[in-house]
Image (cartoon, rainbow over all chains, first blue to last red; front, side, top):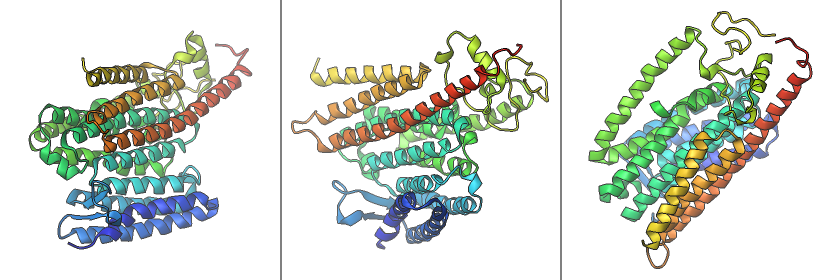
Length: 347
Length: 105
């Protein structure tokens, strides 16, 4: 087996190092470092994928074997996703360096590189708990990236945070249960000796938690405001990369559990399909200019909105409103009829 | 009822109470507190699982500690966000109260 320590470890540690250095650099130097780090990571990832062409590669960092150290393993799907991440990531870095206005500020660079490190760690981990930690790194960086969108994005970021933590806790419970039954955290070793009620419970908990993070059909409410309120360079990053990390973990779990996995795969497939069709009909319904509860509040709050809020006696108890999906919609407000299009400006 | 079962029940209660509050509360701070209650429930399950053997299972304790650290990180980010949202809302309200006081409905 080819020694894959350098490419597998480098794919994770290089972006971490770049993120730490970028955080210390002056703002003007960050795009240069970001582009340099992106291109280097792309090369390292291509090396890792090439070493994977003959079959799964695995390695132990620093020579520590799994019960003590963390095993790294790059499988076929992982190689595909890590390569996709590197290609999309390099494109995003080039775009962000060329158009700094779309990034939401210089804090973009450390956060994005940290997020990339987390993504690569998810794809090369062979350890359930390491996957959990890497998913958390990705989620935390993604929340901060959404919050770069400015005041309208903060509510969406907060909601994303809630969802992310709830999903992570369900996944952590599942990891604990799997470890308690099998005595190992290694993904491929754990699934061999997994069975019975504990396995069913653990897999349903993990599937629910990851479905929250992937935004499968009934649990998808957080995604639309978060992804649309984010800055221009962050939005593709979230949709193309961050969601895929949880999806990959879900995929691994389904693939490694032959019997329960088949049923789970059908359920998840049905939910995914229903999300596609429901998403489309939802968009059509909105195009018919019926006021949706989601677009209730504007990002630049119209003068009407504060009046509406103060008319309610429980102003403080209202849930944080989600920003509307697109800026081009004028602000709907309570004092004017929201059914007319173009909507009249409230004064 | 064994000690383990008792603590698992406590953990499930904490987790459910926290989850309900996270889903239903509107106040940002209340949601963050509920999130931490939920986290306590999750980590208690790990601790109970760790305490099944006579010397405590070090791997599960490590999981619980790492889980704590991650929850603290998320709570910190959540507090910053909540503070900023509340400040922005207060400024927005103040801005609308001044010129809009005599505005016709």
